[in-house]
Length: 100
Image (cartoon, rainbow, N blue to C red; front, side, top):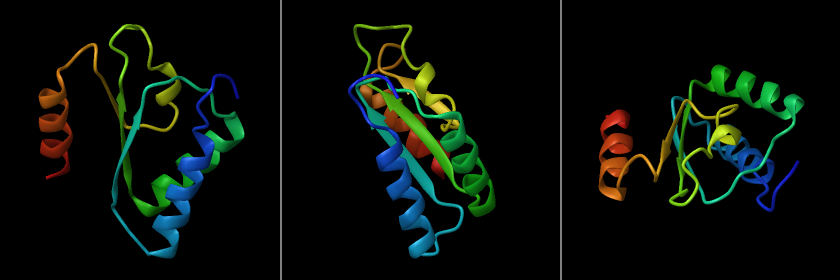
């Protein structure tokens, strides 16, 4: 992994909660202000479990000063919203509107 943000730990906790609580078709929102790589092995395992449980992950990247950031969210997010592309209200409307 690179960067100062550990994405694998919260994603592992997400999988644990979804499995322990028997959530199916859950909606997960992953909010970060940073970039970090996850390993290919982790990404493959996460994708398999995401597909098996039918949940989605929407990423929100607080990247006001870095308009080209966000690639590190793509391996595990179904959709990535960047602060540089939207205002906070627009992101909230799209995330909430997409979950309904």
